[in-house]
Length: 150
Image 1: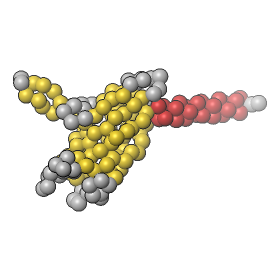
Image 2: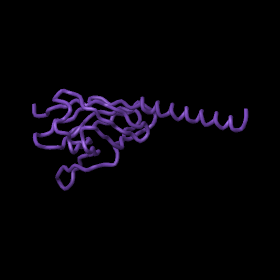
Image 3: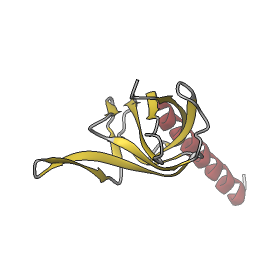
Image 4: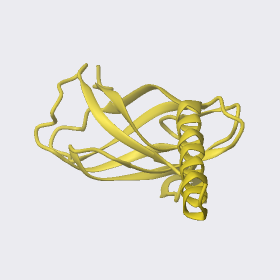
């Protein structure tokens, strides 16, 4: 085999192994019980919650989220400062190997701004979300629209 042929074969093998690694990392993360709170009437902000399980060997982190029905989604946490709970944006949300990270009210969550009016789903319906992870890449999930006032 020529030098060029060997180089092409090596490059092909490298690409295949990288694709397999990405595919393996994606399958290690599972998102369950995703839901979006129906916004308070007249408001264009809300929050989303879910559980993210990592059955893989390596840790990962959620680095961004987006949705076609929202202008912006930020990663947030609640912090206790001077006797008051405050919301703060964070750069990422860790999902350690072999654990589940829970996004829940009063803790880690997705803060959603600039909601489409009306939302493309009614209470009980599904809203698409894209979650992007540092190692596993992006994945599409469906979140149930839930009215917390009921």
